[in-house]
Image 1 (cartoon, rainbow, N blue to C red):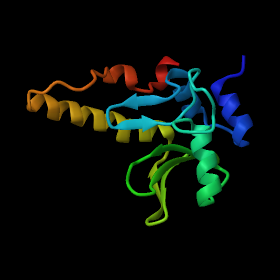
Image 2: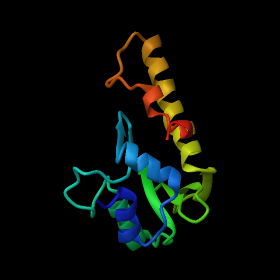
Image 3: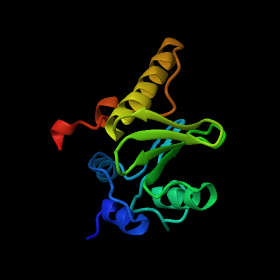
Length: 150
């Protein structure tokens, strides 16, 4: 059976970094209230649209001239800003026409911990302080990409 990593590599002609491959195996595509991280899952009907990393990357290659080495892993919802994983140096960048290219993390795991896990922790703390229940209960320990357990 072909792995998610292999499908992406074949479709996009890049080498998928190992940390992102672990994410793909664990989650496929990640959803939480206010967050969507692109990937690939067995439930997708095709690879040509969102939230598939293949579709997102192909769209941005075609419409924005995205360099071949980048994978689009998230759209931030701010204008044309997208979060991309560089398959060559394995760093994570924010890319947009308005602001250019800005490194946001040295690795996928660092970005996931810093931008996703920390956002969810802060959101849950704010909800608890306001005595509101989260829209969706999220086990943050389960979300962590712990290198020691793989």
